Length: 299
Figure 1 (tube, rainbow, N blue to C red):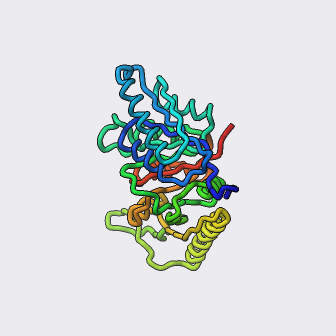
Figure 2: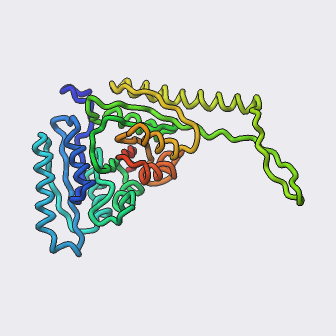
Figure 3: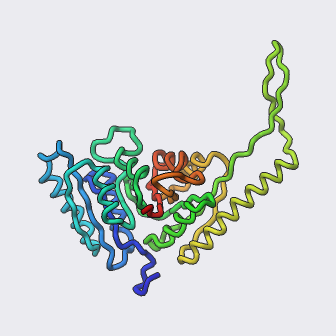
């Protein structure tokens, strides 16, 4: 917490605004957060060469965004650039190094039934900075789920959430998913010379020891994460699950009406652990709520 009583270290926020419903939800989310006085939000609108006839309407919509944020007491500046959205947003981020990039999950021209727009997908895959993908409708950040796997990526996500300007009434949960139990099987002869698997119902001593060890390791990861969050004055509760990581997280998020899932990523290169691999891609596409991918900056 700084000398002014603000826990957040987010001073430079880039909002990629396209005037869509999800983008408006992103504006509402930003406006709802307790920002420090020196925080600056840059509202960026990118228009393509095919949209030059719509330039005036787009500039007017960008001014609406600026006014909405300014009414909440935020310092806001606007940028209006010609080019292709994903390219320009990534270039602008590399040049200005924001503490956070915020955008809606889907733009104005996305096809029905597509859970994540192409621009958002590019930012998640190719961006070098933390990115918050917001899904409409925005109903507040009452329940936050931080998913961890014990990797350095998890540590980044944990510490980033520790300085994220959450509303005072937010509930934070820390979740680890351990691998599914593998049921022992043996092959039994079947008429016709075919062998078929037969499930062994009994659990061996070694398997039971492995189960206990996995659960202890999972709880140890959660405990260490909760202790780190507590140092940031963020209180959290534990949630341990077993099974397919993406399925368990998505199912839990749906049942608990989670507003935001927080995950970690190295970005731009090799990924260790399952975060920002296939699991995080599934979370971004199918979780149904907003998602925050925290990264370390790769210079």
